Image (cartoon, rainbow, N blue to C red):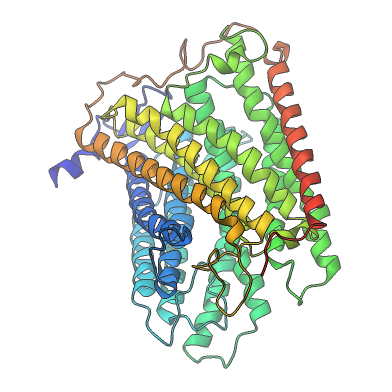
Amino acid sequence: MSAITSLFRNDYDADGFRTCSVTGLDVHRSVENHVKLFGLTAVIALAVGGVFAFTVAMTRWEFIGFLDPGSYYTHLSLHAWNLLIFWMVFMEIAILYVGGPMVLGRKLPLRRLASAGWVIMALGAVGVNASILLTEAPNEAPLLTAYVPLPVSPWFYGTAIVFLFGTTIAALPFFATIWFETRGTRRSLPLVAFGAFITGIIAVEAILGGIAAFAYALAWRVDLIAAVEPGIYRQLYWIIGHGSQQINLLAMITVWYFLTHVVGGAVVVSEKVSRTAFVFYLFFINLGAAHHLLVDPGVSAGWRIWNTSYAFYGAAFASMIHAFAIPAGIEAGRRRRGQGGGLFGWLTSAPWGNPVFAATVFSIILFGFLGGITGVVMGQMQVNMTWHNTFAAVGHFHATVVLGTTLAFMGLVFFVIKTMFRRDFVSNTLASAVPYAYAGAMSIVTLMMMYAGILYGVPRRTAEVVRNIPGSEFSFAAAIPIFMIFGIFAVVAIASGALFILVSVGSLLFGDRLPGGDDGGLLPEGGLHADGGQPIHAVELRGTFTLCLVFLAVFIAIYVLNWYLVTQLWSIGA
């Protein structure tokens, strides 16, 4: 117990503040302790979800065939809820506290509400896990969607609502901080705080949709209403189902801006342009949820086309802005410091041995090339027919949530270990290896998922597909080589995730305590605010411009390829 309580101790002044040796920010005890609390809980959820990631992957890899179909759905539900929801949302509350009171140098207001929010969220998370594990006939494991009229335990819907309610409570101190900061002033919020604020607004939208969907289904399961209209439930559900990913997206981009500046020496090329991109998300990002409903007969073709093309392009345009602004900020910041000449010297000379920097930049690259491009492509109504309910869709959201958000959050956890817990890594070599191993293995896993779905039509959510489809004469045997590669690299990716948890927990328990003023090797060369005196707009950004042209070329190639594949038959046979 003393080892645990020692994790929440640092040296503070009489007012409870201390100056961070890395960011230079004045951090209050209340902020720091709650960031630690939510972050630790998130890592626990990551570990739990990782266990079920192994069992699910080893079942999908039919060479192993670990679980029977009945158990598979239970494990898939536990995997999805712990990694897509609990790991992400606990981390995102921590990010709100970093982006709000920490960046603004304030105490955390409404501390009892923050603590109460954590308690309610934890109870809801435990309740959801228990309701899935203890599911008995005639109820079924709910998966992430819990679609009606599938009979799902009312305890599941109830505890999911509890979790969402706790999240709302935990977010209130952040909004109070923004209110106190902006009340009666004309000052603009710092970009990181502004990004966190937009994240919080979109989170409220998503949470309200989730509470509406689950309350609707709960009323049916406890016989308050006779029936549920599946089409209405699906539309309500995807407000949270896809909205949760939009929270992930904005929180991830906020982390990108924060960490590339602190550990990579990046600058903001244009605050107004970056803020505008966040505002575009506010109005357009949730429209992307429509691609989950493109095969529903209940919505018109006009509705589908509008939401997945014209309106959705507002969010795609915002993502393109960030895709240029963040690497441009890294290039401008490093060139001003005189680090790296030529076209890509600013990038090759970057601190790639720093796991915080490596995880953040891999997140940017892989999210853009694998998650972002495929998201826009599969959001087109015609192309969606080759993606919808295939294993390719699973590959897409692993590219966004795992290669994008999880990698960025791993970098943030490593950052918090050194700056807030004030612990050195138990092994710098292992810590540095984590982002390379995890990003590399998961990239291959994700590509194999996409290939299996796009080229062979392998369905999602089924335990067995390669050997046979029960009740069907069709065979997917041609996809066996893809699943062999998928299985091997899934093991490597899960082992890399386990290594991340071991390094993180090991550093907290056994890492050397960093002395006051020690930056832990996180700061870029020359310190946080060093520059060569050159104005930002006088710095050449030819490296970023070249990378953007490469990205555009890949985007066009994948877009054209997918339209070509619409004209082809899947490689399955009798």
